[in-house]
Amino acid sequence: MSKISKLSILLTLMICCSCQSTKKPVIIPAVEVVKSSSSNRGLEVIGGVEPVYFLPMKTPFDSRIDTGAETSSIDVTNIRFFERDGEKWVSFDLNHGENSENYNFEKRILRKTTIRRIGKNEQRVVVDMDVKIGDNIINAEFTLANREKFSYQGLIGRNILNGRFMVDPSVENTLR
Image 1 (tube, rainbow, N blue to C red):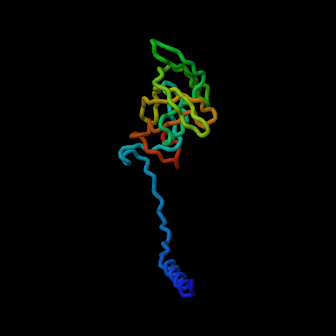
Image 2 (cartoon, rainbow, N blue to C red):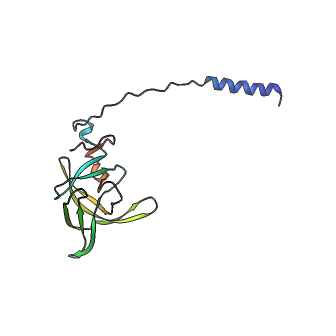
Image 3 (cartoon, one colour):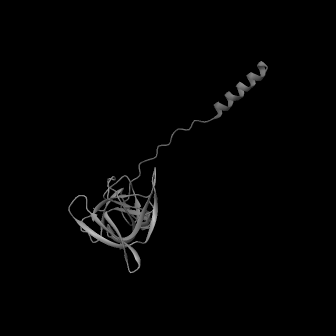
């Protein structure tokens, strides 16, 4: 390759590099979080952790609000399967981790589902539970799980959040 060709290529590269404009970064101003239900298409803004009552229990459970979870989940113990009138049922205990409130539930099993977890998948049963979140009493599907390794006994997923709540993970306990 001749010196003129090399010089021509080098000159072309220099011109191309100098033509690129260097844009200054844009500073986006802070946005105030609106916590009223009158905005956001009528959706109430809740935080990343909220108190949830598993009815008829009287004490709320601090529950993780998880937009990544499709179905809500609750930490239970003493799971026992049985049959009633030809249908599959489950009995389980819900023990409040922060006080001595305990309740035994008997629920018809709606279905079984596979929860995808890192490392392994987990089979769980799904039941209907009545919960109170803020002023809302909601009947929703919950998987029964051993959540003792997690910080929160309850996990509220999209099956409850969709159409009801908007989640701001930067705040907590907006419903207290």
